[in-house]
Each structure stands twice: as structure tokens, then as C-alpha cells.
Length: 119
Image 1 (cartoon, rainbow, N blue to C red):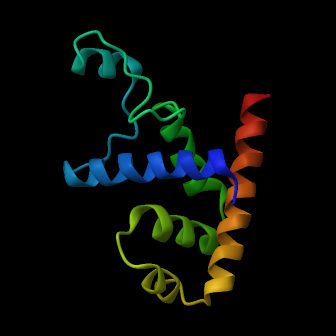
Image 2: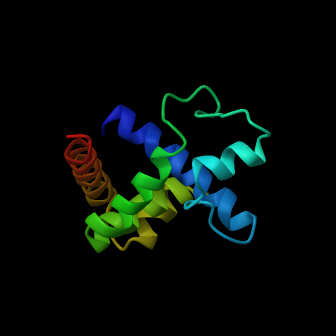
């Protein structure tokens, strides 16, 4: 797995779970809306993370549009599910080795898309 992609996906999972807990998704919120909500203080990172908050929107788009269904499923199970590890790969219908192989492929695909978008 790729360290900074893992960190970005963890942040994405937290934001996604927060959005579901609030009854909707806050993935599409703008910087202006963030400034208004925080009374002018732009908090670009959370919990000491090096991952920018607005990067979660980009990650969400990549996960939903550029990953295969199997890769998307393991990413959602790994970062959005609070279930124990064994139940995660069982929910995906694959072995532990296959689960982590797909997760590694998803990390590389996300990294590739982020590099393309940065260029």
C-alpha cells in the first residue's frame, strides 16, 4: 500500500462517514461554504493530517469514477466500514490475500489519477 494514499483514503472515509451521520454528503461543499461555516478560518487539514480537506472531493470522484467495482468495494470496506478485518474481506467475497491485492491495485490507480490531475 502507498502511505500517503492510505492517509488520503482514511481522511476520505472519515469525511464520508461524517456526511452520512449528518444525513447527507458534504463532499461537494466549496471553500466559500467552509469559510462561512468556520467564520472565516480556513481549516485545510484535520487532526494533523497532511491531506488537504478539499482533496477528499477529488478522492471521492476518483473512487466513484475510475476504480473497478471490485476495487471500489474493497476501498469502501477498508475505509468506511467499522467491521473487523475478517468480515471486510468476507463482505467482498474474496480471500484475505485477494482483498489486499485489490486494495493495492486501488492505491496505485488512485495515485495514477492524482498524478494525471496534477499535471
